[in-house]
View 1 (spheres, one colour):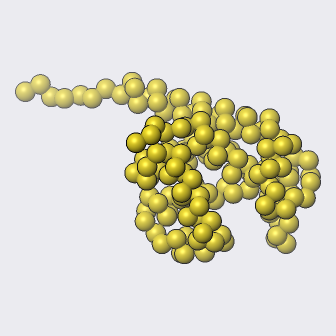
View 2 (cartoon, rainbow, N blue to C red):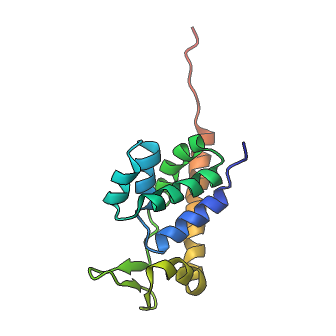
View 3 (cartoon, one colour):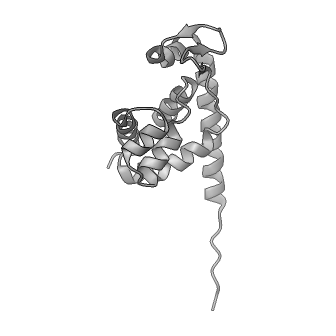
Length: 149
């Protein structure tokens, strides 16, 4: 089993969220962690079940296994809570960048973030990595108390 590539996972999730797919981790939690059917979850988030399965497959690949992916998704949700999309969809289905006010095609949203707002992506990744380090530090400091009987 290969090790978890947290940097790659965090980069993937941050780019998805900034690009307007802020539902990603909720959908993956419902599908992978809670075991809901892909069609139901996909319908709830207005994506195809093939997209949902693709997201799940990428998270599983980056995690190293499905079991690890199921454990890491809640952690990714926790550390990405302050990351907000910079590409928003209006009621007419038009995707607009909130930073530069550019209208972008849905399929170009992540590339727009990567190309024109790399600083925002870098900040989001840095913030998520810092939160992950805090979680790791708390876990390392946790003391298990046992009764001496």
